[in-house]
Length: 406
Image 1 (cartoon, rainbow, N blue to C red):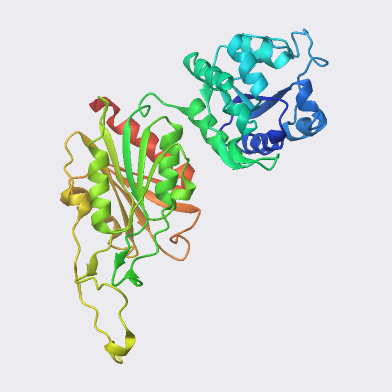
Image 2: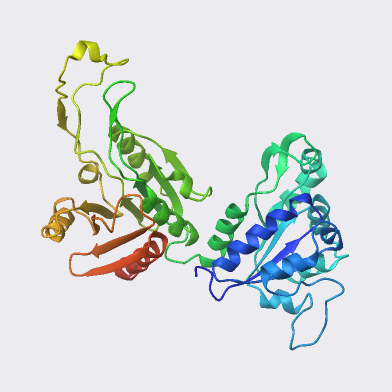
């Protein structure tokens, strides 16, 4: 129930991309939001209003349904006050250019002029229309006026042209909406760097050593941080596809690539707030002593093959932690000694917190759920459930623990 108690107004205009708005509304409803829809007459030529009423579970607002009965708040003034955010998706070229000029000749545009909170536009138009200098100038003007503009996609359009102009995907609009509604002062604009997935260490050009880490926990944390307004960089070998596109997603594989990119990102903080480092990746304890170019032939190895390994570098212990709040992740299978090992990690690697994850048949790599114990030097907290929910719980407790130190 990520968006519970949030009121979202969705405006739909005359565009073939309007079918995507139905999926977007479904995502909002599933996340617990209350959704109302305002339609232009042009939009109703593409989809019957009853479809939006069924999906949103509310009657639509248009010129025929607008009323000034204060008990219903179904007019362009009251519905603007009711909603927490206004999403116009799809936003046609006609609507974009009218908005930029302050024209309000339909109910949707009148609502936009009456709106005092965030308006998010997700444009959709033929390539020639979206890249017309008039439309481009209008989008620039709307950005300066405080509108949030989502980029269009380049793909095959309904007219069979291949080019820019397709509306953003519903999940990307959903992510943007969550970021606008859930941003938090403590995390907003704070630089946060995460590692995720397992390292991939080459033996030769076709074989490697790795582990089963999926990267899902790191992506869930990155998503929660993005929603809270943080400046997020996710350095990972796996799981990047689960994180919003608004995150700086960096795919790497080897330990050395992890170290290089993490250190680079940690130096990029332009904010007075302390940087956070979440070391979620499962880094190989040992790596091949020598990487062979090409492919090792089994004919040259014989019946047995002794692969020589060497101890790997410890990235988390070696990273300079000045002005950084660092959180390590430790996966254990030894239930008896797991917490002791995590507490030793906290001290030995000079960390501020450790997230302990005990793996067993009910808590495996790649699962959608997780069981985490967040360990500080003086206390610990336990969480279980969906990885995104756990991520919010971890971040809430970190905020409570360290906000007084800044």
